[in-house]
Length: 187
Image (cartoon, rainbow, N blue to C red):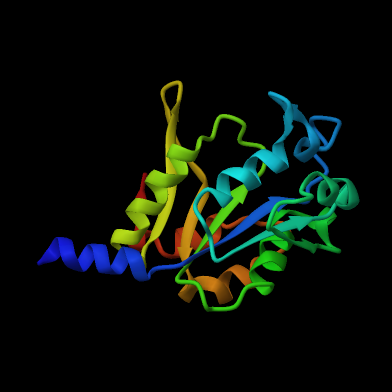
């Protein structure tokens, strides 16, 4: 039956996570990954939410304030990857995280650390949708006033890992999403 097939697919799919925590947060004036929210810094909070998904691997890409970020992740089962080119833009961090992954996972969840309103239930919905069609890109969407906004978190099938590795330093993952719009699910 179809439900059995979906359940079997969901059980067989594995997910890796890339958490971006390298930027300088120049507009904020301090490293947003270290900003405290309800007694916990944002990078630790995001990592904890991602770990709730029981990913195959969780890669945290550091750059600005790398030692402090790593210290705030102490005692969490995460791997940190230092992006030497963190100042050149988000694309450099995405590529650094993607290079640290192998193709062993079926999908890659790309997250940023400064989404303080993100909840575990939001990530669960994203992953549940992705697991029904693991070859598709699953992109978060929400309303901001009258606008429909899309952005991270986003799950890419690992078949797109090479494209994530090749993102120009000053770009984001949007260009990969745009090139595969026929394969995008919005959640």
